[in-house]
Amino acid sequence: MHEKGKNLDLMLSCAVCANVMEEKNVNVVAEQEMKTVFHALCPKCLTASLFFLSRTEKGLVSVGTATDLNREEAMKIFGQKAISADEVIEVYRSMTEMKSEK
Image: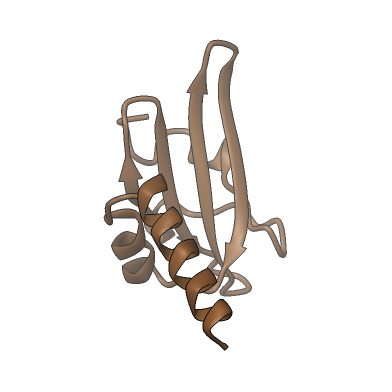
């Protein structure tokens, strides 16, 4: 997965028009040891997509979805720290308290 663009045509096609993505329209937005997230813009229909590529024991798995995020927004979102379970619980408690005060 560290060789950006190698064999992308086998895995990345537009979710809307099925056009094969060109390397120049594909950007790595997040990368870990066994998984990579790509942002791609279809040159044919101009649909933006996010592709999640993971290496597993059985080979490579690729999932793609259309998105309204541009490349910069995707890089910003995937570069952020994940939300913790404690933060989710804190928001839930705050919302529950606000609801009970009404």
